Length: 327
Image (cartoon, rainbow, N blue to C red; front, side, top):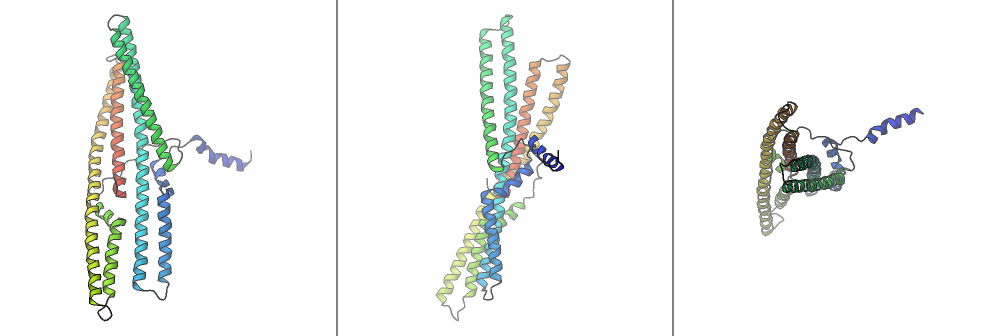
């Protein structure tokens, strides 16, 4: 076989085997989202427009300010579009991981219910159980199978949602360790970069610029006073926007704090569940508990694992919701 063909096969082999998608790899797909691409086009055009404006020998102050404002707003809008796309990806990614655990949990419930039905049938045959016990066990198995079907459908839906954002993937890698809880001051930093806040402040800047450009030597007093009134209205509007967005960012940060506390609790509970399961395995090996009892212990551990996974996913989602400035 030719060396070139061998090299091509070496490149294709990992793809054929199907590598798991990581959260980092998924987030890298955010720039492919249509809103982000549109924001990038506007940013590039605003940057080129500013360069053209600055090169104009007849440049006026209002033209320069407006071009600078357009670029600043385009930059902020791009960053928000990117953060929102990343937030959507994080949400879809974490939902798939949680759905996978829900399927495992449902599968374990089916296994336990099947074993429970076998036990009920054995007890009926040896006279220690009734036909009603068997019917109840059968009903529990049917319900467990129905729950498994719903969990599998939920997983398929979650996978489809993620694929619509990042394309095909063979599987997902576990979530990495989450970023540490940021300082509360991050809310103010994000507020200052919010496009809505920036646009409100730009209106104030333009309104005040119009006042500065009016001189009594060539502008009527009524015109100057009207411009001043518009500047005051713009300032009042900006304060209202800042108040509303401030409350929104405070709420998002509080959600992140709550998610951090919940994550700590669930991770501690998972550690306890892991230790309990290890002890139950020792008891099973020593003949102190039945296989059915051990299956119940495995189910409890999976429930703790799912709760911890959901808490971790909630933290990641809350973190990116804060960055995106939206729930």
